[in-house]
Length: 248
Length: 319
Image (cartoon, rainbow over all chains, first blue to last red; front, side):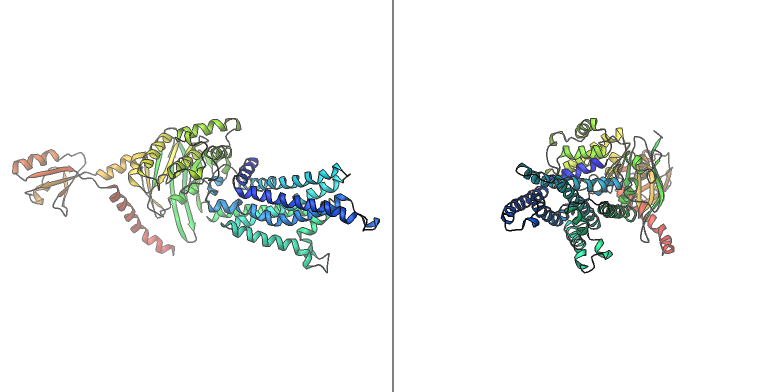
């Protein structure tokens, strides 16, 4: 059943120009940053730096592309997630889901999964793009995989939060703005506590947990953090939808 | 025919301190079209939302073919097809796409989804609209898509909330015909505030007003209410009222504002023949004699007003 809901959601995303435009724009952005990264690599690495400070092409280009990808997701995900529930609320289609033999959990997880599948197209695209470096050099695939995993977990966290804000309102734009603000704050929490790197408040920051992935380290602590983050917001969404049924 | 497919037991729903629906109990028999009648804001839609598991009742319960919708929502919901008041259509999809989604959501096996979609389209006269975007369909066709998604999984019960609202007369006729068709194979609950519609489509009627069930019976009962035992008679040289009262079987004689007589007679008497005979004999100048029909609107007003008077003390107690 979850798969059916996810399929419907994916179909919805591709049925509107919004999905295609976001996909195209992001790919354009990633592509140009990739190109710029490769060009810069030759400029920077052509002898002006001492040999000990040289970095490999994977990290050099990868850092640029994944850095910008995580930043752009911050804008793209709220735009994609805004309509997931509030759009249905606006067009009064929620009763269709509620009266079908599907549980609320299946509805919410299905919608979440649909969005993740959509976003993983982008992650796969980046991975494929960076893999082309392998044609003329020997790249570190482990680094790319760790970054991809980090990016997809980050995007999934954004989506979970986006769905929750989408369930709060019947205006998609309001949902988008709210989730953007919330995500922006969560991303930068560690910056506010820059002087105390180990403060617990900084520990909530999404970016802090993405950083180890972007260095090529897969830390179970970070994976658990993201999973907890996602579960929390999905459960909150289910609770919110259930209160629709209870309170009317 | 006596097997109940749906049982509503003491359904109540409160919004704040207001009762939208109060102690509504009824049942739906297999293969029956039940009309749910009531003025705006009477609690029709609220009841329907509770029947389909879209809204949790404050008290009471609903059983679909013996399955409790609150305890086993998945099993119960699989037996219902529901078309809410505002049709829930994903307008970015084509008719085919939308109906396949509806079929899959309602647990139609993936191998028979295509068959189910074709069957629903055929029943609702949508076959030539298969690849049109729902957004571009006319109001009437959109409504048909709404009905198609409600019957796609061959449910035991089809619940339609005001299916003919906002349609033109031709579309209304077609939709009514469609509902009658559906009623042959499924049990149907139909809500409306259009009175003649109930008479045309339904086998049984219940009238709800201000959250209370005020009438419950077959369409014949309602017609009985409507016809009554009354004759409307016009005389150009009218006799006195007492003279008319002496006719056998006459219970009550009234004169309406146009000078016509309304004679109420007892059951099993048919005084028309005698009145005509007397009128001819005594030269009353009889020019009109016909059964006096109370309009459905009148019955409706009677039923709902009586109830609202009864309700007054309750409401005071409430607050």
